Amino acid sequence: MHRQELLTLLDRHRTRFMDEAAFVRKAREYILQHENCFDRALWPGHVTGSAWVINPARDRVLLLLHGKHNQWFQPGGHADGDHDVLRVALRETSEETGLDAARIKLVDGAVFDLDIHTIPAGHCGPEHQHIDIRFLVEIDDTLPIPGSHESHDVMWVPLNQVSAFNNNRSTYRMVEKTRHLRHWRAA
Image 1 (cartoon, one colour):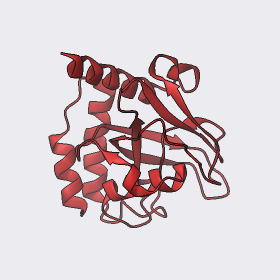
Image 2 (image 1 turned 180 degrees about the vertical axis):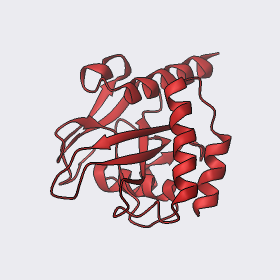
Image 3 (image 1 turned 90 degrees about the vertical axis):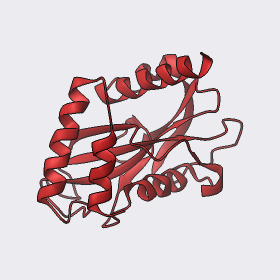
């Protein structure tokens, strides 16, 4: 995937959330202006890839207690120059869960959510923004999840309890989208 392919994915992405729609516009502008938008050395921000991991029943979400930020998030990380942000999201999911990539099922190749959030200054550099492109994946929740050194803990969380672990607006959006998927699937 090259920059144009990501722009095409963003052009196809539709959302009912005003904040996310604004993020999509801002991300498009930034990606168009910065050919190296996938490079973590680009300041004031860069593209990252993550996965919203649901179980087959779509009533639980896999969250990781992030090693550096000590907060619960979905798997994801830096592109490190890889223009295929979907591949980045799947790679990071495998690395951070400790699962073989064959156990991770991509629901579809469309953007599930997009968020732009600020990362505080730290040993890795100054305060900056992540333009996080998120894809929907499914993992069998009966499988043991070994985790990795990047997270303090990995846990399946019931959809209706996610806000107790992470009450960020972007997480709320993904929970609401998952609820909609469950409703659509049952209809």
